[in-house]
Amino acid sequence: MKNGLLLLALVLGLSTQAGKLTTVKEVFYDCHQDCANVASAAAATAGGATIDAEAELYDECAAKYCD
Amino acid sequence: MIFILSSGKVFSQIKNGRVIYTVSFNKEAALKELDSMHITDPFVRAGLKEYYEFADDVTMQLDFSEEYSRFHGERSLESDNAKTSAFMAIMSGLSSNTYVNLNTGEVYKDTDVLAGVLIKQPPLKWNLTRETKTIANYTCYKAMAIWEITTSSGERKHKLEAWYTPDIPLSLGPYLFTGLPGVILELHVPKQNLIFKAESLDLNPPVPEEVNFPDKKIISQEEADNILRGYLKDVKN
Image 1 (tube, rainbow over the protein chains, first blue to last red):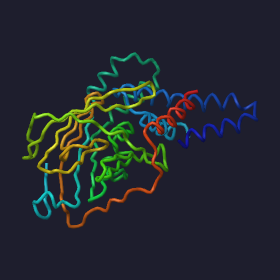
Image 2 (image 1 turned 120 degrees about the horizontal axis):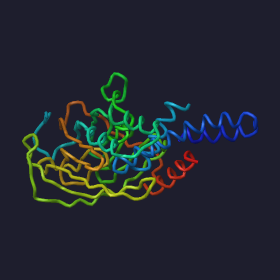
Image 3 (image 1 turned 180 degrees about the horizontal axis):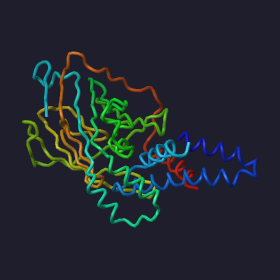
Image 4 (image 1 turned 30 degrees about the horizontal axis):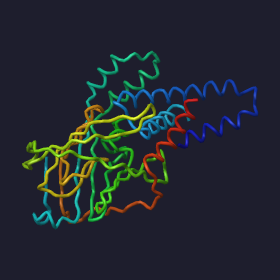
């Protein structure tokens, strides 16, 4: 959950720095989006995993690659 | 498999104990499934491959007292469990703690992804059969259930196959799976390629592990699903 809150805080904070927003957002969002995709795919291929398992997979990936 | 009765053999006098389970994942089946899937994103494909290739066996322990049980595992760097993939840690229950109120049979999941709350699990409805097999000299009976879960893409139903022994009449089992008239010594979740197997059982040990129920707010699985559905939606958009 912390990564989601961190994401929200950073996006809100950066929105006032329009010049930097695009670059940072691309890098930041790509990583989180990639992790969300991996978590989603993993949860789907495991015959269907619970939402909390998918959220946990996302958190683990984001902590490892994005933060 | 090692089964120990530390003191006495009268099962009605069991006050506490520990069951050690090994959780295995069928990597070959999962990797084969991955090969047949049309995944074009290289990051996603690599991520899944890593999850499955390193999904090594996990050792879990179920500690119980007269009131509560706790299913958990060791995750320190010195532990073999640390070598397994994040996927396996999550699917096996290693990344969470599961508590059962042995008086009511209610099951609660304590997971980092929703820190501060316990998620009360919907009860399983078991279909008991007369089919038997012997596990570590115990006669075990087969029971089947449908595990209904909510995924981010809808409801899913997973068949569960459990082997429990009425010879040890304690309603205990691995992870979220309990509610039978005996300890579950083996449990299969075929669609998830997971198998839980009891490796040892120690009843009434001289120094029992204390099992304390966490003082946390309790929410339903439905409430948890709603929160997490919103969370996942946020991170995907």
